[in-house]
Image (cartoon, rainbow, N blue to C red):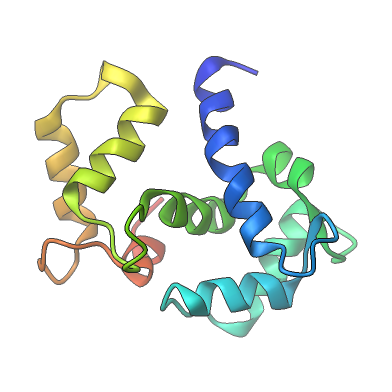
Length: 139
């Protein structure tokens, strides 16, 4: 595992543990759904099952190792959003966005590029990214 991936895994683990409300070491569809709703997000019902199946084809609950191995886009976006939202307001401002992206990418990206990325995700141009805005962006 390269250094960038290790940084991402370090950020995702506490979020996974927070999402795992019954503390069994696995995420169920219901736990994922509850976490998305707590972050003021929403997805079509079938997307929750697809997220789980993308990590575990049997469709049963998923472990952290399965998430790390498969890195499904939707789950990773949800978990990174939560990790970036340092003040817990269910919104990511530009400094929070820069902080999380700099951890992942280091100095290979300029602040001006980060600001453009942020503007591209912030669909309503209010200076904040919500989970629905992040989930609706093109991967």
